[in-house]
Image (cartoon, rainbow, N blue to C red; front, side, top):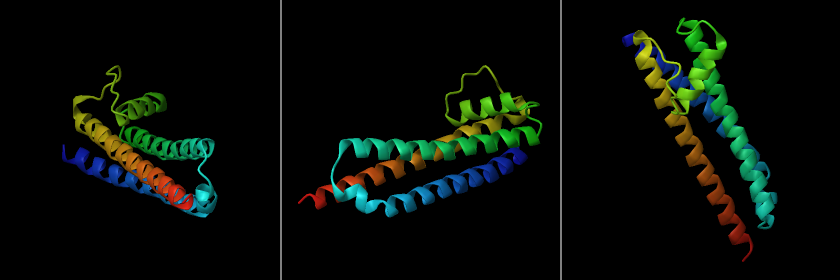
Length: 144
């Protein structure tokens, strides 16, 4: 049990670092295109920007799922990449079909995967909402 908690804690820290890097890059991009973003309020522009932000952040989420899959392979939780990645994605997104499950000796690690998914989705949601809010606020102030 302790080894699962240790492994899970390190992997969660790793995925938070991955997502922080993705968010940091996105923040720099948004800052660099800030003038263009706020110059005029345009629905199509916002749709494109929000879509691009979501795609980028899903990339970070996907990288985290791959990290979990690698951990499952390293510790022989799974023997092949496909079930390791499948379980990682399904659990990370808290979907949990139940068609692929971990043995009793790894159940806690599976639960930590789901907790990690909630953390990363929460980070992404908070960032998206704040970014959209700041963009709209700047657009409205610029139109006065």
